[in-house]
Length: 598
Image 1 (tube, rainbow, N blue to C red):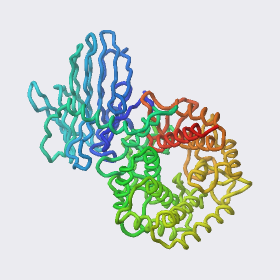
Image 2: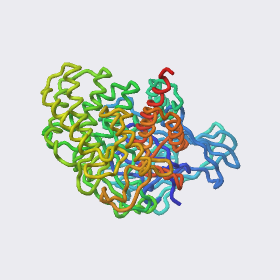
Image 3: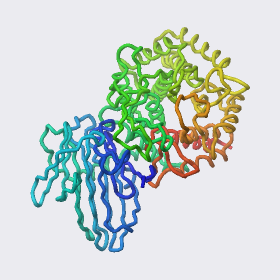
């Protein structure tokens, strides 16, 4: 039985993440970083690819779960025939964000609430995406047992119980009674270091709760979708690396866009576009310090020749992200191949520079001061855009067929020059503003001629097709939301891309992406339609669609990349920054409309 994607909850220490299924199994964990190799990969194979199951022995036990306030401390309450118990799962957040990572802890605290509850534990550590079976030994003492698993550079130690070995897995059974419990702590450390000291669980729990809650308390409460906005911003923070400032697109790789198909990609990296849009959502809610940290990350990542600019990087700015298939993993729901790395890193996606400059412009407007290198960095990016002005690209959807002049990409190049001009005109920065104005106008004239057909904007020059990225044109100021061409584009999207009330990215049947198979509605695109409806007076449509989209979040408020409205299930990598940042933007758009007089 494949665990539905929506059955997972996220644990995070802002460096890596674990996915915990409703049945108490941790099926995905990469150590020590989100884009490191996994120690648990059952998510993409089976139990023997690594996982940690912890649940009552009562097969009829019923779980109810929630996060402890505005944190990523997961509380699962188990109701059994003999009693009630809770499991508190969390990953301690280190108090010093720039400290070198020498350990990563994952805590499972089992607490008896009433009666007596028997639990069973099954641990299977498999480093390197299930390819490295570790050397395991039991150490410690009778009162403080330890199990240490080592393979290559990685090691983990489990403390809390004495386990029994059974054919490369380790198990234990125990009971908890009211007000009694067991702390189970799995700690990763470099195998060439000494085993770390035992964790002070009470202190770690207190500090982790305080860290998350104090961060969330800075978010202005309120609004019809206030709960969803807070959780979404928390997800964006969870995907932002505590040490480097890199913002990952998602916590997973190879969760499929088409169940059983080949559209399975690794999203554990920093797409400049996704990170920029994430920052815009965070900036809108006052998190200016994260923008400064990411701007510094960006400077490190793109330093050097602008010709070497990539559309994505590793969490610390790594450039080499070769796409590799892992044939030994069966794939989620048989969706193969499983991939690590991402070949899209080598693509040219013309919109990326525009996304970055729009975000840095927003940060400047919000009060982020210039550093010695910030404006030179932006000029570096504008020069890159001008040097590639005529080049077709792969677009924001990362097509793997022939590059095109995608209308959205051309608009984002326009936006790059527009923000450069504004920096000079509104903030007194230096630059060849006349040239930038000329290029901005040249792009507008070109788009007006080639990016419009039959009265609506088109996916790329030379076609009558539309795609959902066109919904972003008003958001960057290229046209008004009620521009007749935009209204016609929305009508065409409703006719050709809306399926079961949700928006597809584009029509895969045209073959534009060069891939076999199809995909499901992309959640971010439907949130963009909410924004468009709200901006053009279709408030009832906007509110109805927003309510429906928010209902797709799972019981702890998380969204994947796509949604299958026929099977009523989440699809794609999880949780997805794009979905959550689009939710925040849509909620903000609705809030603005509601505040308007009359």
